[in-house]
Every structure is written in C-alpha cells, then in structure tokens.
Amino acid sequence: MPDTPPVFRFAPSPNGLLHLGHALSAMLNHDMAKATNGRFLLRIEDIDQTRCRPEFETAISRDLAWLGLDWERPVRRQSDHLDAYASALERLNELGVVYPSVMTRGEIKAAVAEAEADGRTWPRDPDGSPLYPGRERTCSASERADLLASGRAYAWRLDMQKAISLLGGTPLTWDESGAGPMDEAGVILANPAAWGDVILSRSDAPSSYHLSVVVDDALQGVTHVVRGRDLYHATSVHRLLQRLLDLPQPLYHHHRLILGPDGRKLSKSNQDTGIAAFRAAGRTPEEVRALIV
Ligand code: GLU
Image 1 (cartoon, protein in one colour):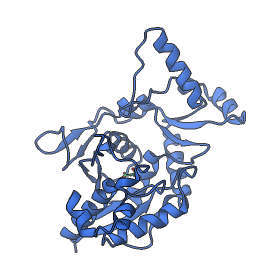
Image 2 (cartoon, helix red, strand yellow; image 1 turned 30 degrees about the vertical axis):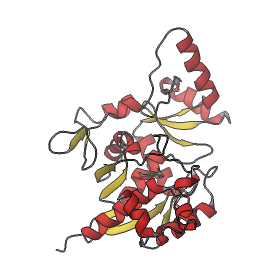
Image 3 (cartoon, protein in one colour; image 1 turned 30 degrees about the horizontal axis):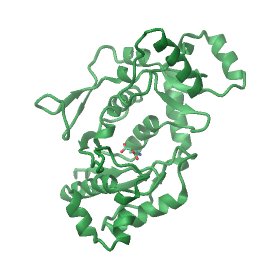
Image 4 (cartoon, protein in one colour; image 1 turned 135 degrees about the horizontal axis):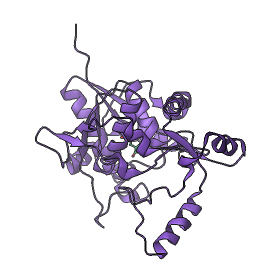
C-alpha cells in the first residue's frame, strides 16, 4: 500500500495584512512539505466575522504567491463549515462536558477585580486572561434549560475538570519537534487545566479558534502542525479536544517568533514589517526569505 503523504497547513486569520512572522510560518510549512513530498494547504480562519475582511483574504493569497509559495485548491474557509463545528460541539454536549455561560467580558473583569481587591490572587490562563469566575457549570438540568430559554446571550464553555476526568488518568501528551520544554523523545505533557473553562462558541462567533482548529486539522488530514511559539500552550487544549472527539493526533512544531524593534511579537497593525510593505519598497521575495528563514 502506498504511504500517504504528510499534510502541512498555513492557517492565517484574515483580520489584517501578513507580516514577517506569517511569512516564516508559511515558508516553513511550504518547505517542510516540499522536503517530504508532502501536501501544503492554506486555510482561512475567519470564524470571528467581526474582525475578518474579504480584502485581507485577497491580500493573503497575493502576498503568499509573491513569496513564491503554491498551495492546494480549493482553500478551506472556516465560515463555510460552521455545521462541522456545531456537530463537534453537539458531540461534546452529549459527553456532558460543555455548559452555557452568561457572564459578559465586563462582568468577568469586574468579578475578578473585586476578588483581587479582597486580596485574592485570581488564576490566569497562559495568555494572561483570568479564568472564568462564573458558576453555571454547577447548574441543574432545569436551571440550564431555563437559562437557554431566557433569551440571554450565552457562550458554550468546556467544563475543564469534567473533560479532564473523562481521560481516566491516561496522560495527555503531544509530540514536538520545535521549542521545548520536553523529554528527550520530544514528548510534552499537556496541561489543559491551566486554561480553565475555555469558550467553544459564543453568540457573535459560532465556533472558537480551539474548536475549529482541531476539527479542521482532522477533517483535512493534517499530519504536521507547524506554527508560532505563541500557540504552544494552546496545544494543551487542542490535544484535550482531540481526545474527547476521538480525532487523530498530528505532530507539532512550534517555531520561534519574529520580534519587532521593541522586542515584542509582531502585530498585524505594525505595517513596517508587512509583506506588502517590503514589496512596495522594492525588496525581492528572496530578500524577505533571507531575513527570516
Ligand atoms: N489562525 C491562527 C492565527 O492566525 C493560527 C492557527 C494555527 O496555526 O493553529 O494565529
């Protein structure tokens, strides 16, 4: 039986122009696919329709093509596949590991500020956001039904402790070929509990990054996830969702981040390091590649 080729993907969100950090990610994926006779996919992660724009999607294709990259068509656009994410959420609901939560961002902020003013240290996730302070996970079935029928906006959250308990004590790990800390075999012990009850869908965004990324990687047969170090800790949540949803486990490679002159991670609003700015300044794709790879 012929071996199936490895599958790599670059998965930007069209909420701004691509910068050097994206170029590094895209080039690494493309080069690794080429070196292994693998496939290279582009996936448009446009779940957050309040921030994503079609013109940025067009700019992504233009910038990647200018860099000399080629990818398979058709391109998967997440907003075209909301049913797939809804089915995954339904599966998690059947497992009893999700609950509707009603606290707004403002209410969360106020509750945490109050606890901290009382001298308590409030736990924060690896991105620095406070863990969810609401108690809706403990609602009875009838309280939950009332809440869903009340017309209040709510977000579905993962009941993290319950989800972890379903693993039955089997360690949750991933295989990493990029940045550590890891054991000698490149195996990392995941720590999803650090994220608390993450959001899986909300009224203004029908699926979250975490949920759609694991569903899509599985549906597209992605074997290698190559992405920036900023998403390293998110892999703990992805591995947990993969286990709960019975999805295959890709190999992970988290690459270094390119920092701006201020020593911070590049952002899409910093146009000096945008690919389009390099092109407009008359730089060649080879020069851009030499700067980063
Ligand atoms: N869409 C994510 C971003 O633009 C990347 C997702 C991933 O590579 O897993 O940061």
